[in-house]
Length: 636
Ligand SMILES: Nc1ncnc2c1ncn2[C@@H]1O[C@H](COP(=O)(O)OP(=O)(O)OP(=O)(O)O)[C@@H](O)[C@H]1O
Image 1 (cartoon, rainbow, N blue to C red):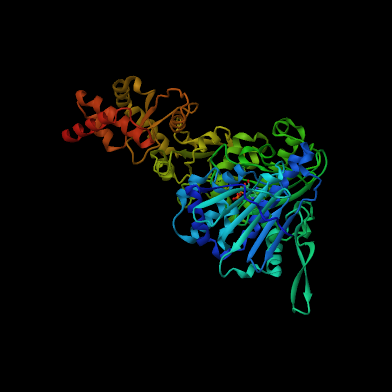
Image 2 (cartoon, helix red, strand yellow):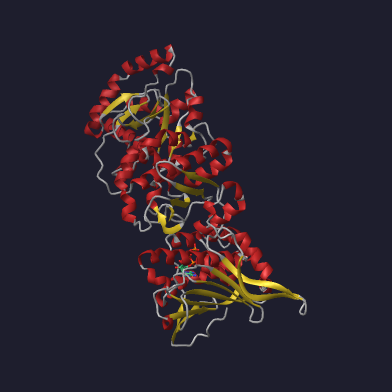
């Protein structure tokens, strides 16, 4: 194909955004060993550009200008040492070229840069997760020229963007006869491998076979005279050029699924797992859904990209169609192709459509089945999934009432009998390990694993060898407000209410408890008077072994940890007064009992404050606490 030499109309030179410079430098160094991915990225962009045009042309058929055969072409010129990828897609305006090719406007950019380590291998992985895109051209090229004309622009209004990847780029207004974009790479010294039809075809088949548009190259023939392959003028399609998800599962290899995933998810890594189904019946659609290996940079950004690509009868409709999956499955990537939705469907229509609801429910079920399958048959993969996305899946307990029980089975927790902070135990594991006579699932929750696992509330459970779930994810308390029981066993916070451990105590312990309660009644009364309205109640407890006292709240009240989270989120939280529970066996209480009336009040406040601290609270007046502590220490 011959390209009209662009005639210059107006030109300017601009600097890359600082992040782009950093990214370019990094990419060239970390991805060199996998340099041929530039071709995948350029073909992927070209395919997206054609998808966009096809979609915009539904409302504005004029955009097609009679050229409706969308395709991507790859050429090379051995003399000029260039490789060119061109498409007849939507094209770029001058402004789009400046902003899309000169900056990184993606959410998660800041997090990405903050995570870089300087270690090429680790950074290569991160770049992969971030998406390498267009800039990967500079791995093999020392100059890149992008000639583009938007589908709605005049021939004289095309743009030529050029850069050597060193920090600046130029944009020039030029002429281009046809719409679309061609990206020309001027290869670096030593990259002549790519000046071969055989090599380019091989890379294209490996990485871009799943692209649904034809990827074409000029046919080559053997020339006896030159005793070499020589290009003809005829274009031939080098990929399968039908949408991957429309092919029967048995015809698709794992590698093809993996490459397809990389294309749609802009991920550098393979997916963890996928599910591919054709659904018929009430609603007709095909779903090809992938679980990524890594959480994207913007997983916690509620405004971030999420959702899957929507197609209607193989026509691309939109990216990130968030209505097709529930929020708690926002990490899933993939394609849904509906046979029922109208081609001109908008996000607003999606919101209300009955077909969409059916698809969302069906897709959620499919993803849950995939997770169940991993959990059961590939526990290592499931553990990897849980580490990345467990916290998000937990949201499903509250968001998806219909699938709550299935999600509950997929939850994994750290427990007092597990390996540190690792969340590996399922509720079924816990139930399987319950002691005889135990009818509850116990948990403790705090801001961090360290705080939760050192809670004084755990003491009696340790003594009795009862397992407790140790919760420290932000979402946990909220999730548990929806998960009251599992297989008939109530979930109980060990920091709430009177602990009903009776059924687990032997006769002697019970007798001892009653006696202690009686014996320490006067101390309890004295503490109540001294603490006044700072506490709701004071009582003797059996739950402590090593600590002198702790605070608890009533079973029906919000836990202090949850209250603190609400306050931190700027929400109004009710005032909840703690109940002080004392361990009369502890030497400190003996000491307090003997204190003079004058000191007793100070001791009582000290006991309350240290119990609050152990529970993870911030004291309203920590200076007073320190003063009181020092004064009592001196007296002792
Ligand atoms: N052939 C093309 N036609 C039209 N626009 C393009 C083309 N190639 C790139 N662009 C524009 O430039 C932008 C940047 O491309 P780039 O490949 O860097 O990122 P991306 O495709 O958005 O994401 P990723 O980096 O994850 O691939 C694209 O989003 C698109 O708007």
